[in-house]
Amino acid sequence: MKITKKIPDSFKTKTNKINTRDLVIPPSEKTNIHNHHDREYWSVKSGEGVLYSNNKKVKLTSGDYIEFSPFEAHTVENLGNEDFCFTSYWYVDWESLLAVFDQEQQFDSKLMIETAFPTPNGPLHLGHLSGAYLISDIQKRCCELIGIEYFSYCGTYGHTNHIDKTAICQKVSYDNLVSRSEEAIFTALERFQVNYNSFLPHFPSSEEFQYSKNMFLNLLNASPFLIEREVDHPYSEASKEYVCESYVAGGCPQCGEITIGIECENCGLYQDECNLIAPFHSVTKENLVLKPVNRLYIKLEKEISDKLLIQMYCNNNAMSRVCYDNYNKYLDKGNLKYIPVSSLRKKGVPVYGEQVLSVVMERALRSYHGISQYPRANRHLFFCGYDNMCGSGMLLPYILKILGIPNSQLPVGVINNFCLLENKKFSTGENHAIWANEFLSSHPSDLVRLYLSYIQSPTINSNFCLKELYNLSNQFVTLLITIFEEWNRLNTYYTGIVEAGPWLKQDIIFYKELNSSMSFCIDNLLSYASKATVNRVIYLLKSIKDYIFESDSYRYNQNYLRTRLALISYAYQCLAFCLYPLTPIISTCILDCLNTDIANYQSQKNEIPVIEGLDFSKLIEELSKIKEDVL
Image 1 (cartoon, rainbow, N blue to C red):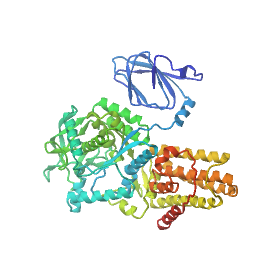
Image 2 (image 1 turned 180 degrees about the vertical axis):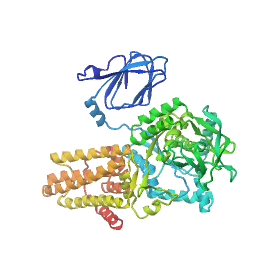
Image 3 (image 1 turned 45 degrees about the vertical axis):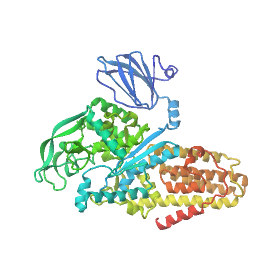
């Protein structure tokens, strides 16, 4: 975006047709935020407006010319008392468009990666791992590759009464259930190759957390947005008590589906129990009455919501755009007016008499503590499932914003869709699941990660199928074994140090393809398109296999053979770099054979190494054992 007092030069020299349109924005109105592939400029004729573009806010007046590059998101709002009038001019600049495509992604230098906290009321299943935990770990490993400083954060802290319900059902104490569930969660994450810089336990004892909690409560209580409301709350006449969160169910006011009083799994809306349609007790099925009670709330202000909507839109990928699309749906239906601050739950952080922080406010406390541990963050990604979309992807940044957290540190929701099992959602309660610890004890985590990455979609639910896992894994492992066995065979025809010599055009094309594949894989993984990366990896494996087979005709020509061997070893290195975020163990084994590691990605990603004495026998043996034992 550029603002000047003259027509942009790129339009002065344009000879083809330029499209034009006059627009009038009445007072207090605004345009829909959007981006497009056209090059565009506006000429302001009269009035005053406020332009929002790529998280920048600029005042516009008569005589201003504003130029937008392709894909720059923008919207303008009329905050004055007169019409804001401007003319839009646009055309497609294909050369500029291609230049945008060719630019390398610009990465934030200090990234906070926060993952939704698992509830310690039972073990994790593959549906859990397939979403936020895998996607955020891939993001973290991409940061390791490209040299971006990051801070990964997760934990089990949080007092949802899911835990109470499960403890009562299993006839164990709350503390006992949490303890054994935490151990099972730690083990599953470790087996899945997922770890964090900081993990906040369910019973935190650190002085740092106590300080964060006190600061959070002080900021909350001092906030002018905090209000007290009398509301009609679900109440059980049988037990003579208010019923909240997971103990109450009813119709969702957004979609009408039956949901518990936390979040709707169908539409993602964060629930205020007081707004449920025909509430009933989720355990006893008793129809509940409504009884007045005072609670604390935060009122959602339109101006703040609008700014957050712009920020959501500017996070230009499918897994973040879903927050923007659904936020508008909730607002249009009037279901996001107040955020519940206090809850009538029995356990938690006291905030209002005997009332404790609500679920979404505890999430805000957790994020606040994470930010306090990593104050250098200039971007904050929050990975969670579709059912957490409203609370974590929308309300969480709103809460932190009104508490004074800078825009650059507000969490950006990365929302994954559900992973289904036999076309039905994984369900702990219904025991419709494949339990992570049991499965990972007999299946290599790398192959499970590869398959879950393959079925992952940024826009639709995925479906886990054991037969598909075995088919993909078998194809992948067989290709790996083949390319390394062929190296050992081809290398017997060459003696001495392997260093690239004369190149043929086919060698140049192969080299370009390897570099293109690395860029493609990392770019797609950073954009949460892991399936495209897995497909490219399979294609790359086949390309390497074909290149090796073609190289057989040069086995008696030492000069050409050394170039081929050098490029094949470089292909292994490229493959390992592409694989690292997906299959870290296999990737590390390949790099070990090549006497390098991921720390050399930046310095070696385009360099063809000089090599001597490569031997993949041990790696082939390990891969063959996997194929024999598992596949």
